Image (cartoon, rainbow, N blue to C red; front, side, top):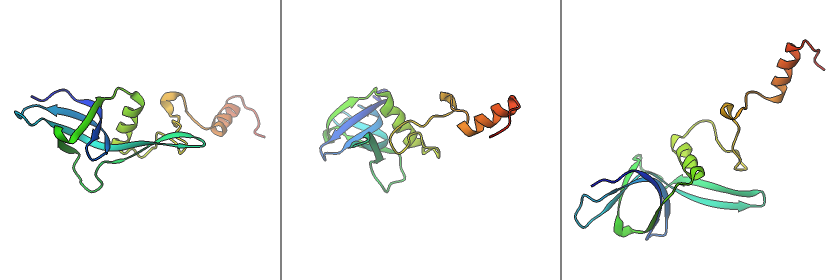
Length: 135
C-alpha cells in the first residue's frame, strides 16, 4: 500500500544524505520500496560571513525525476518539517530564473515582502509627486 507523500532526509548505506519528497510503497510482501521525487544532496558550508546550504542533484546525468530505493539500502530516514529546507528544495526543483537567495545566503526581497522599487526610483516618484526639483 502506498503511503502519504512527505519530505524526508535519508541516510543511505553508501554514506549519501538525500533530501526528497518521498512515498513509502509497502505493496511488495517482504520488499518495501521508497519512491523518491527529485532527490537532492544538501550540505551546509560555514564561512567567516555565515553558514549557507549548497544543493545539487542526487544523480547528475538522468533526465528522470522519480527514483526507487529498496529499504535495505537505507540506514535511517526522518521526516522533515523544516520550512526553510522545504522552501529551498522547492525553489531549487522549480529552477526559477530569479534567485531567491543571494550569494551570502540571505533571502532576496520581493514584492510580496514589500519590495516595490529601488531607492532611486522611489525618490524620483516622490519628487515628481510633490513637484520638487531633483538635486
